[in-house]
Length: 68
Image (cartoon, rainbow, N blue to C red):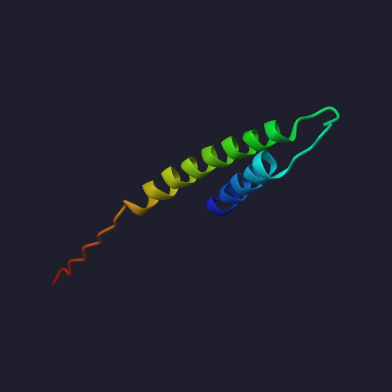
């Protein structure tokens, strides 16, 4: 899961949690789904940052010596 998808999930979850008002939910609660999407998005964002952060710390130095 990339950073963009994680931010998208957080945004959709926030809209479902705070922006949608359903008077009579039938079978499922949109607020709960919104919270679940925000949590999954936050976990994905943290995982993406950890994975990409570890790749940026690596530096490869190649030294070449000519033998005469």
